[in-house]
Length: 222
Image 1 (cartoon, rainbow, N blue to C red):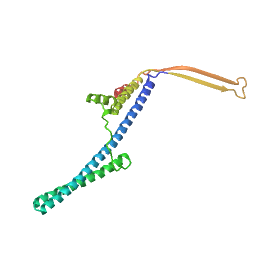
Image 2: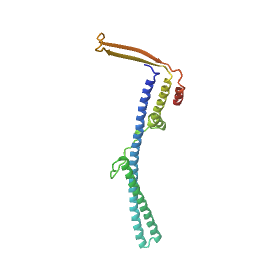
Image 3: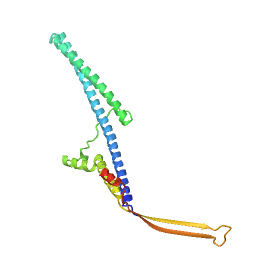
Image 4: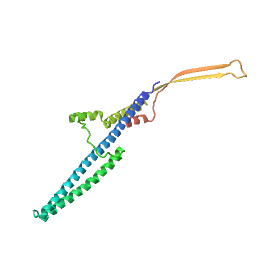
């Protein structure tokens, strides 16, 4: 009937634990979405860099061809040809690095998203309209809506309820005790065929001294 509100506090604590678990799930969901968006943007970036390096190699190849033609007619020196060849070799090296980065980005995209990326990617629409317009607004929204913050707030509620539960152990407890008993007569005695007995009592328990364990539990919870 009464136990120092321990049952109600345990219920509120369990509700806060459920809400905190949901916020923890939101953290995981946000991380998964962030990983997917990051892998998409990395692949889009490496794809653009690869295309740029391919065009750069084409331009350098044409420049080397023109430099050699000019060298054959005596307009430039062999040094100019060597410099053009060096630029082309550097461009090819950058192209190889870009190809390696693009293959790595494709593998990371497959790992995160679970499906191979399409041959060509297009940039998504900007999401600036969904974000706060000021830094103060972003900070305020983060403090009120970010799942890590809300999870911590629920954890505070859980700890507060734990203190109240520990304090409830110091209060008296009131319980109702009922007993119902029905006896049937035997074949040897037919005077009483059946007998019904019932009793209801209230039991009050008052803690006097329990070794200080409750006070230690309260200090620990605080």
